[in-house]
Image (cartoon, rainbow, N blue to C red; front, side, top):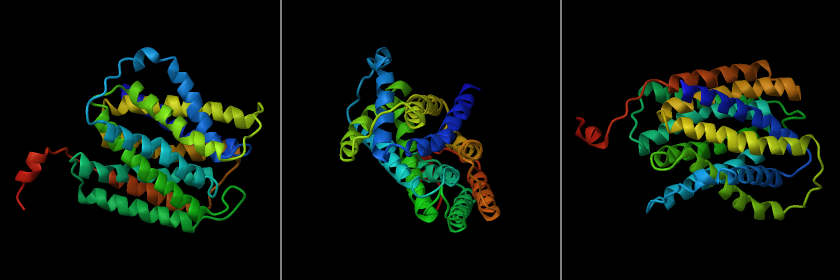
Length: 297
């Protein structure tokens, strides 16, 4: 029961992150926001040095570790930051619903998890819903170019799917604290020069800075650590199911804090996305390579 509970809390925190990012972007540029949240999380991880001291690198793992860190947080946060400059928090949250079928596709290729025809139909349905959601979007104060923004958020989800597969492989050999701290430290190093290329902001206590601290402590550290702990204890396909809750949380928080809303057409598109995601979670069996090779043509 513990892994599902951890995933429920993690997805709630991720759903709230879209709102926090919107608030932070009002006073700080995207690169400064991302760098600062990574730096805050890194400082917090320094207090967990006892857990980090247990890190024992295994030869050859640098490729997976590098790919995991590059996919998320590096490229993921670049795409997400750009997306939230053009689309609303609610719409960006809905796009995250395509993560499970994307992760399932990569799991089929790299983890040898079998995907059924119903699962493939679910991915197609979710993708059609995503296109509909983007085309039905209306430009407003929260979404100046929703089609571009939703496309960028989709790219972020592709990066997240790569991250999930790498994380699942690496979790067999490294602790969740080690892997999560690696994300924070690598993100801090990666985004520092990008932040310095932009104007240095005036750091004043207010909602934007509070949002950045929240992102660093509760999302970059908290949500990722909870997710990494859970994914080490359950199948990848089962863990990614919980990402479907992110849009629900995001819409609730956006309605509550940002006074955002969706049109009837967009809500219908959201329903199509969710239907596709449900189809995409059809039961998949994990087959070893030898078994798959022995299957008749």
